[in-house]
Image (cartoon, rainbow over all chains, first blue to last red; front, side, top):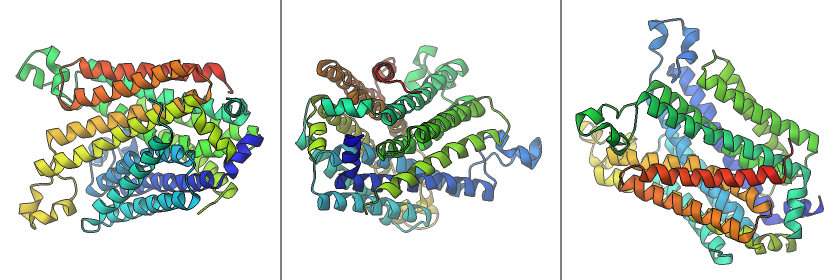
Length: 155
Length: 155
Length: 155
């Protein structure tokens, strides 16, 4: 187990682990927010979810889309589209031997940008708030990918 | 290569690898089920997919949504939303030095919950079957994230 | 840090890192293509995105779906559904000690198949171009999963 301990004791890897967990927990929160709006707005996607509202036509009317439910779902999908690259590229970046301070800068900006993106999406804040926060996270990921490819390119 | 062998020889990591592969293969199965329903129900999303049914109006009618296709797709997306956090947090958890028995308990419950979630979604079983299986996988992931953040927090 | 350097110096892991970064960057490109079509076709999902087109009814008409935007979004989702398994299974595969030449074969075919899949989806090329490129990537991932499960099964 010694070698694994050395991996988890590596400061850059520890920072990656911390921020990866934070952004994933933030993404998981989107599921709860979706569920909250689905129940509050009575807007469901599956007939079996509306069974407790009665049978037949009385329940069918709750099988509908709701603007706020759809907004949270778009935010959730945007998280998936951006956090998956961060997880993959961030792991490789953490293993590519960056300076701790540089790595922390990348991870902190990414996590901050994604948290702000969610706030901007759900409030919603006027554009370009959401667009800019998306772009900041995007550029941080590209910057890490550049370091990964520069360090060890093996085509 | 010695160090890599030690990583793959680590029992907790091996357990993670096994269950990560299982849940990912289960998720990949959703693509096949979607394709199966699309072909059986003749419900496609792209004009080029319907070309073999003839040209013009006769093919256009197959460009439609089908309740069962949409159900499988929702199940697939739910997998993505929940299995991505498991992969990321589970890897960090496996590297954080948990007891093998505790780790296996987490991985087994998660995999079982996600397999049951798919069965509950596709059958469909009456609620709260699907909701509960979703919640079990969610709580297992939170529990692993807690261990990760407790072990090595580096903000 | 010695151990991490050994990990990143491992040739198979380096190849994995390279191709993982490539397919993730390709996936990230889908966000830019979506944004391009949304702006060019003036087809947005959020009211705040159309605010620059004026207020009231004049802006509301840009809250709509567009066939090309939806096409790119389906390609993006298909990437997520297939690249996430590649990232997870590919990492475990890279750690399972495969021959470098075999590993490179897997990674190159997968990356090539996914790049061709995007071209086939966006052009669009007649079927079965897209279907076959999807299937090739799928089979490569299954092949890697088989190696992972054969190497170290710990249920």
